[in-house]
Length: 386
Image 1 (cartoon, one colour):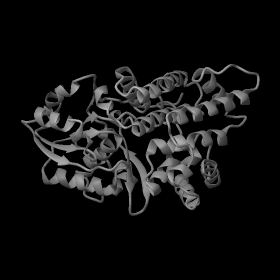
Image 2 (spheres, rainbow, N blue to C red):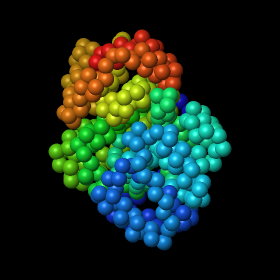
Image 3 (cartoon, one colour):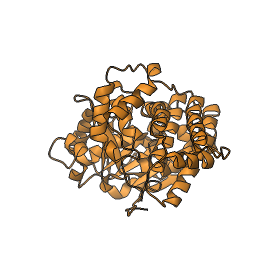
Image 4 (cartoon, rainbow, N blue to C red):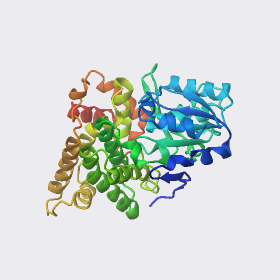
């Protein structure tokens, strides 16, 4: 196990009606609140009005229309609102996109240069407004970590950033808020959770036994409860378990002590940068092909562990048989969530494979991945998904 720093200081208020604590949570930071949200679903489901009622003694400045893959222009718009209104705290109400955008807004408020600098070089993030979140979608885990992914639509570049100061101070997680999610978002969020865990699970660091056992438990949780959430959208247990799995998948508990870059996310970032593809859908499409591409004599034992401990496959003297069965089970699981499993199905052809592959290698540090990937590798993986 490698050396690491683990600091997940976010206060979690989990359960039904925890939003009632919002005034008490925000009060220490001040009265001027930037209310960040997306396309307006929080107005349809009543959360917006609940917040207005609870925070009647606060000054709320609306910051709406944050995109599913948040744009740099939204970051710039939010930072200007913070400066103009001397905002004390950001209240991010939504899923990962709203929270990600809010993190970079929080940092850009204090940065005199272009906001994109903070995405390209996270070391420039030294100060940020406090962030409080109300989660409305389980998937990214952004409610309990420092990371944020922003898209520059001018350069077609999607990149992650983040610093310790951008971790949300408090996150309110009410599973009932997830019950009105469309099926596609529930499925995509579940695939996102699954992929976050796999990115840490498939690393070459030896003797990170406890991290892997936690990871296997989270993967099994998603396998059990994602289909149930689709079948029974108002099932509280399903929504609660997926929400907590989302946070644990990416708050550092699975990945700390296991160094190296991720493999699938950098490739998917290019798909959503160029085609605005839903992130979780792209991850689900890519994952089985990536697995098949990296399966070899050096990785097969890890795939066997995955097959036996996560999918409960029958042991066999043929390790590659078990490994391939595990990969097939992964693909079948994503299909069971009604996720399209080819790029063709989501309207993506092969015309930009080389371009996207080059960018993924450059920005994703794929030479540090579990199995190092070069341009040819990425293009082969993309072609296998076509």
